[in-house]
Length: 270
Image 1 (cartoon, rainbow, N blue to C red):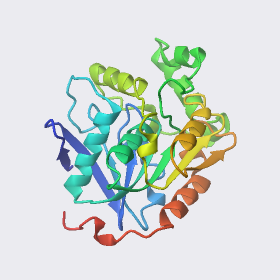
Image 2 (image 1 turned 90 degrees about the horizontal axis):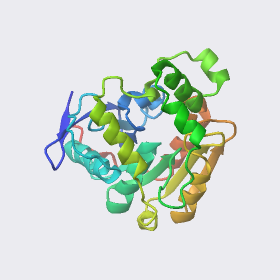
Image 3 (image 1 turned 135 degrees about the vertical axis):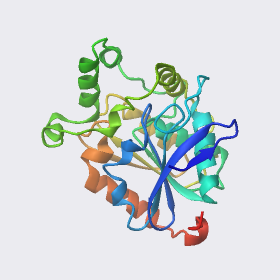
């Protein structure tokens, strides 16, 4: 598996599939590229999908140092550099959406179009999950904690016909220190002051019944990012992109297709 070298020397594993201009897909907290396995094929007829394993997960290095969402954005940029992708469309969900905010704000020349799903700008105005949700995720019984996370991700009706495995539940191979660093990085995210620096056309997606990251945060993103567009999925929970796959995939593909991107933006020989 290819790996890019971050500025601090950390090796970041990445994966590509499909053909066409690059679409960088950024996963949620403590997850690998498996987060996208259920839906990435929807984009591949016309796009080269690019995923990565965050530092601390999968086949990437797992240094025992503090992590941050701006730091994850630097790692993502290293992957684009390794691929020779001068510009890319970026679709980030959950913590990946937090990372995508920094990437688009600090490197506007590298992000053509931006999709932010089930995510938050962080900061003092962010709407946090309830204490009940926090307690359920911190249950000392791993089986109960897993069931709680499944319930936050998907509706019971969808789970009844989609038993898994589910790549959205985290990387089971993560060392404890890396899991902790991911948790802190996501919790400390605050891009509220740089949302106005995002110049890429932006689509914001969210499930209305998301209790893991309440949908009110989508309004904050649209308020802060110039001309951002909001689409909600009634009744959907955190993993709207899987449960509402047909509708969400079409929205994203139509949004990205609004402007064509030259195929030369990512040299095939690299």
